Image (cartoon, rainbow, N blue to C red; front, side, top):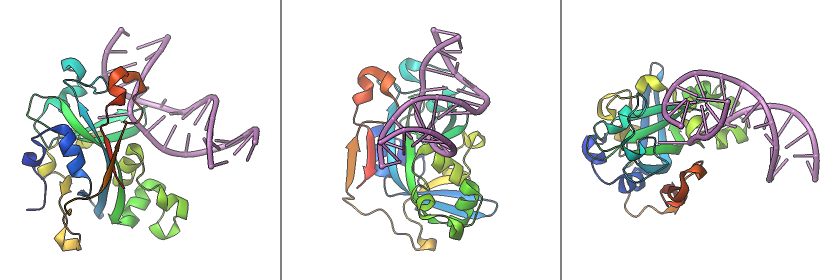
Length: 203
DNA sequence: TTCAGGATGTACT
DNA sequence: GTACATCCTGAAC
C-alpha cells in the first residue's frame, strides 16, 4: 500500500525528514484531491533541540500532539495568521516531528489556486505559480490545512502521505534522489540548535 | 532587485 | 508584555 502509515514514521526523525522528500502529500477536499510532491522538510527533536516546541519535555495544550503516536498530524498557528504542517515521528511519548516546509503542486492545481489566490490556475501569473508552495504557511493555505487536522492520524484522515499515487500516474520515490542539507529557517533564537543541519530539500 | 515593517493569535514569562 | 518553526506590501534602489 502506497499510503504511509505509523510504521514509516516510527524511526529517527532526521532520517524520516530525508525520506519524506519526493513522497506525495495528499489533501482530500470536498471539491476533490490536491496533491503536492514534498520538496523541503525540517526535523525537530524535543529531547535535544531548543528549537522544538516540546524541548526539555515541555507539555502544553499545543505541544501535546508532539508526544502522540508516530504518523499523527501536528498543525499549529504561527505569527497569529499562518499554519505550519508537521507529522509526528518516533515512538509515542517521544516529542519529535518533521515540518513540511515546501512542495510542488502536481495535481488539483485549480483547487489549490482557488484556496491560495482565489482564482483558477490559468489566471495565475508566472510569479504566483513559482511561489505556489514555497514556505510552510503558503503550503498550508494552498492545501486548506488548519488546526482542525491537528491530532489526526495521517494514515486515516483527509490529509496523508503516499509513496507514489498509481491512480494518478505518479511513481514511487526512486532510490538515490539527490537532495541538499542545511540550517533550519527562522530559529536563530535556538542557540546551538540553530546550527543543526536538519533542513533538507530536493536539488 | 532587496529590505523594513506590520499584521495577528497563542504561548509563555 | 514579549516572542514566535511567517508572509505580504510598499519604498528605495
